[in-house]
Length: 360
Image 1 (cartoon, rainbow, N blue to C red):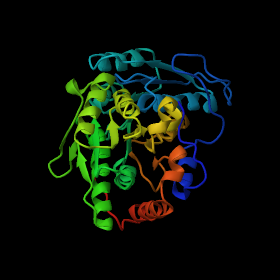
Image 2: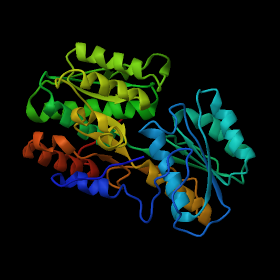
Image 3: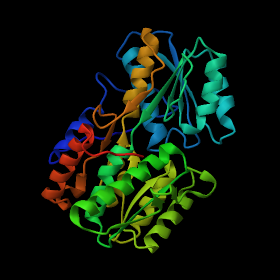
Image 4: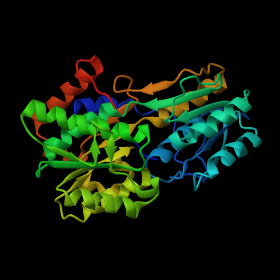
């Protein structure tokens, strides 16, 4: 459940990563385990969470979100309960189980739980719901979407990938063609295009076509299929890709495995958390990660529900509010030229100001 801790040498990463840390005491509890000592007087307020099929130990999406609930437990003194989904068929029944458990706030994790969350919220107006990675056009009064504009930091990652590529080809694959997945892929590809425009280069992207929104995804949309992710990464490598952005939850580890086995020829980024921290065995192949401060958003949503200030206004994490970020380069810091770092800093400022438009 680690997130980005920014080192010196990259000013924009310092700003982003620093604000991804929630204030006050945190907990080091692991999913399903005992929590750390709380920082507030114990209350009987019960906040609950339902994972998607990736599970709470995915080193990425679910785990970072779960940390937000554990931070709420430590800082607010609340009680918590969670249930882990193994298949898509578990979603509705697991949400109902949390309703039956008399949870006052229920956080659901992932785009695929959108329908189950909406139905449960409408049937239980006295319970506050928050859902990570889903925003409703007309949300019920008791539902808050927690969304993240991941195209923005992915644009930076694409620019960086293009600058690092030795073959002139980079790649990406996803777990499923969900908008919350393709947003990463689209931003990445457009960042490569921007690099080409600025540098007069012709770096190619395989695995995603932003023009017609088609790309490479795990067969059966199984985010838990690490072997499937590895095969897709190897397919991209066979097409010449030497910097990969997997957007597939636990299946993204397959990209790291393929990069690690390349003997230094291929790099693989990580998403949702800082992979350098959450996937330490692959540090040698991770130049950066595209992160989402989901833990902070979840903590705030639970706090608002407990304090009575909850609203159904959708939260959108951006570079400007530090809800999304490009992680530091860590061991690759010396391999990224000062010129490229300066360009990325300026590009971040231009995205925030609107001078550079990023869609995804």
